[in-house]
Length: 141
Image 1 (spheres, rainbow, N blue to C red):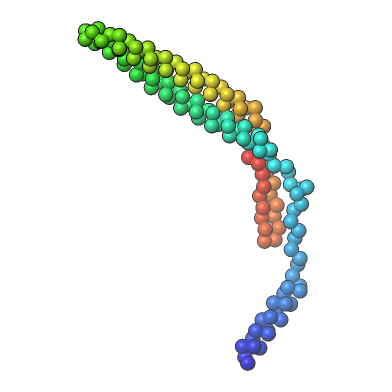
Image 2: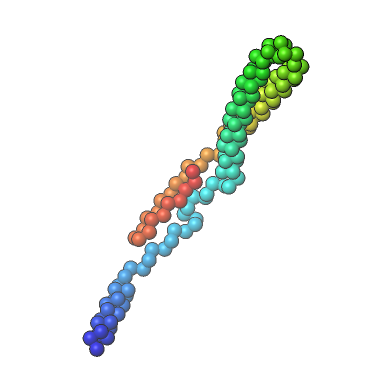
């Protein structure tokens, strides 16, 4: 019996608190929030950074291939003595051509990536809304 009285007391206490509680604050309307940045501008910026990264990788590959081609150039002297000059010269020319192609591709990728980054609109809108029991932060970066 004591348990029933305790439960009834707790129920009436909870009801009295809910009757006097303030109504929850309304959620901010979507009209008050700034428009989010279009996905198009963010995707342009992301594509720009990816292209810049690819251009950097191509530039590193080009540098490695230039190193390999110059090593092949030094081995041409040894090839003259061994009689395999033609194969060594072909390997040198192939690596040098690959290095040049990678260098041109890296310049094109870096230029395209930087252009995409600079052309995409920058958004830094931030809005913070606070209410009792709720904090929201919305923005585009």
